[in-house]
Image (cartoon, rainbow, N blue to C red; front, side, top):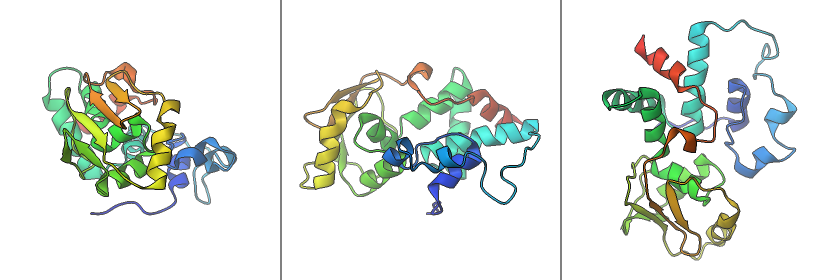
Length: 206
C-alpha cells in the first residue's frame, strides 16, 4: 500500500499547524515547525491569497495527515459519514476517531498516530481478545482494546507512561493492564485538535 515516506515536519509546515506527527519531538525545541513556521519550498515564506477552494483543501489535507490515512480512505470515510444520520462533519470525525490506531494513540500507548499504526501492524494489540493487526478497524461501544503480553522494553516504557496521558471520556482505560474499553461513541467535544469539518464537507459536496 502507498504510504508517505518523506519528512513528517514538512507536512506540519505545509498545513500551518502542528500535527504532532513525531511525538515527543514536536514538544521539544527541535520541532521544525517552531523553528520554521512557513510552508516548505523556495517560495514558502511568501504571502499568498488563499481561495475558498484552497482553504477547504488545506483543511481536508490537515485532517487526512493528522489521522494518517490515504486519499481514497478519507473519501470513503466521507461517503460513509454522509450516508449516516446526523451532521456529516461530526460523523466523519467520529469515524476517524474510532480507528484502532487512533484508539491506541488516545490510550497513551504511542507518541504519535504513526507509531500507533506501526504497533498495530506488528500485532501488539487485541480487540475483544482476538488479534487485531489492521489499523483501520473501527471500534464500537463495548469493545475492549488490550496490549498483548510482551517483553519489549519500549512497550513496557509506554505502558508506564500511560498515567501521564489525557484520555478522552469515551474510553475507560486500565493503565495496569494496558487496556481500554470503549464506553461510548466519541463526541465532537472529545476531539482536542482544531478542525473545521464543515470546510471538508463543502469541498466534497461540490
